Amino acid sequence: MQKLPIGIQSFSELRKGGFLYVDKTQSIYELTEGSKYYFLSRPRRFGKSLLLSTIGALFLGQKELFQGLWIEDKWNWNKKHPVLHIPFASLDYKVNGLEVELQKHIQEIAHSYRIALRNDSLKNQFEELLRKLSEKEEQVVLLIDEYDKPIIDYLGGDIGQARENQQVLKNFYSVIKDSDPYLRLVFITGVSKFSKVSIFSDLNNLYDLTIHDRIAAKMLGYTQEELESCFEDYITYTASQLDVKEEALIERIREWYNGYSWDGQLYVYNPFSILNFFQKGVFLNYWFKTATPAFLIELVRKEPFYDFDGIAVGEEAFDAFELREKLDLVMLFFQTGYLTIKAWDRAFGLYTLGYPNREVKSSMLNYLAKAFADVEASEMRPLITRLREYFLKGDIAQVVSLLNGLFKRMPYQLKAKTEVSYHALVHIVFHLLGMYMRSEVNTLDGRADAIVETEQTVYCMEFKLDKSAKEALKQIKERGYLEGYHQTGKKTIAIGINFSSEKGCIDDWEMEAC
Image 1: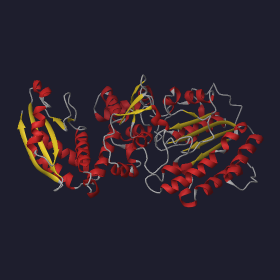
Image 2: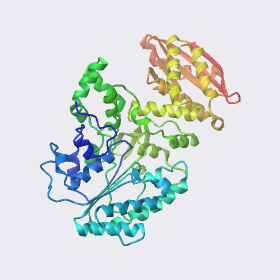
Image 3: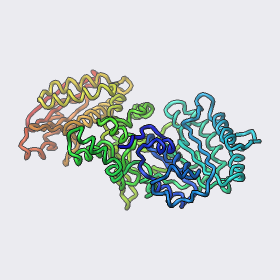
């Protein structure tokens, strides 16, 4: 089996080191034969840096790296172009400032091509470098990786610094349009998609690949076909190690790591999670662990907002991201990869967003629990495991006791927003429980707060605030939340629970067979 390229972002290193490469060169070729200016937004750890490194190697004419790949006999290797690559993740702007670091990088590239820059300002040096590179060799290939990092690094914190960096970038990128004669290709990638007005006001010819582009959909991430063909040996080996059939393993991998889509039709795997899974052979939350979304959780706590699955948005939402004090939380979650397009209604231009897969959903729910109950992510799985055991035993007193423990840990500032905060915690806890047993919140004739199903029993739970457990029980019976389960032959139990906002906990509960 070929080595797995975990963490490798250099195409040269990957190919020379004999690592597994999922061939994306046909998609790259199709793009280079089309437009000239491209923008692509994708979540972190999705292969954006490797993509740009591959494009760079292609235009530098490094034919030896492409042996055996689709593009090998289709590219003109005799024509080479200078490549100007700006990887913002490698710039130390937090210490030295963004403008200083950009200028330093531009000067280093000029020096590598033996070009002397005569201008002093960043903007003029950038223009001078593009012009002189083009005059000295061929038109320049400009690759900008993580263009937005100097902005998103400060979201949820120093918004002033984010705005300052935004102006530096806007001034810097303004050079590109007037440098058109010097450019062969411009490819800009990032996590977020800020509006053209705020960043690329002059680049009105920038083609956005992010949503509904057939080529881009396959260019980053692994398709189902690529998973089963390129990782065939790993699937066979892992299935034998886990003592499961290959078909069952593939389905479980799909549940855990597939589900990312930017058109609601083609779904792909996160490469980082797949590579790590086959390396360790264990189902874990690999992608989520690489960066805890602390600022997102703080924004959730301020709203507060918790039910992200199944959100409907219009087409306009994907083009309306602005840097402001109150950020669009749903679109932030989408752009950073915690939500994806689950369905697209062509007739009305409506998109349904949701968690892409089990890895992201379970991880995000754990962190939301931290926001609403001050419970660390590492604590949630043991708590949910105990909750599952109590339901299986029918020990509802312990279920209530565990819930009470969570409600007492709710941060003080959230208790002022009592109803939404309690609802949030119930939602999070029972959706997490649904990862390990059947747990849901919807019925055909109404909306039950929680329904939990074991092999012998179906429990329906209704929560009230500053009322009574009897009133909660009455609602379950009157609205027939359990009627659809009577034909299963299982016991059906209604549980009414009341929260006291004064006491900050459950002060009354009753259960009844019905």
